[in-house]
Amino acid sequence: MAATDLESASTERAVATSVDPAEVPSAAWGWSGESRKTFRIAGWVVVVALLGMTIGNHQGHVEDIFLIGLAGLLAAIMVVDSLTRRVPR
Image (cartoon, rainbow, N blue to C red; front, side, top):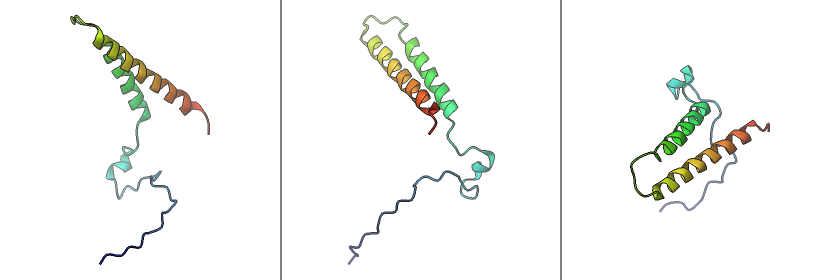
């Protein structure tokens, strides 16, 4: 029969701030972290692409509302993220 005892929860941080190159070989070249600058550039490219999709030969404009709304939502998220990253903690 399996034991019913539970291990106590640890308060250690689940995400390591540094990566061991032995575990992740690409860490030696600096490829292990997230590239926030790349994500921001990609986000703005997506905003421009969504707004570019409003130009076309479609008759109804319901899709324009969704495209503009999603582009505005993504732009707002990116602006808020940019402003909150600048605040020193």
